[in-house]
Image (cartoon, rainbow, N blue to C red; front, side, top):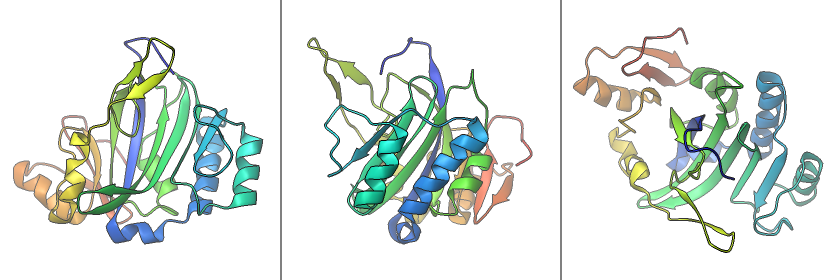
Length: 226
């Protein structure tokens, strides 16, 4: 999918890291994401992909009915990622048990075009965390010429294909998560208590609001009611 150079979407990214992934309920998470789009955005994504042995050819997508039927028939154990989207409008992506230097993590992304919808990191976190234990999360603006999970640029080939050069620089904080590392260049974050302590060592003025077991903080923007 390709968009105007200036077009960006708002993405809320949530991570379950290490043993906290054991609390993920995949079937309930997928159901809750679909409910979220219907209740908060008023519509479902139109195109879905299930990554794994679910009979979907590479580069192809399916509609909501086939998406639900395939998951009902084959279950939720065999996929490693899935997504739903309406181009340039809204969508979600989920990645499960991805490898990183010292372990694994899972990631859920909910995104939307801010010219058409509005929501907040706290609102979406409250919806997601029931079935996806959030270790940490944040809000980020992303050019949709980039792949949402990797945040790397999508390149269009001469023959019409696309490719993504993957780098993991923006996920280095996950490696040191147990020591309190977090993604520092962003404005709105969900931090655990150790991450918050690390943040306050550098910026003692930071205030936080509890969101479940996490702390919602804002850098460089007016503090909002969570």
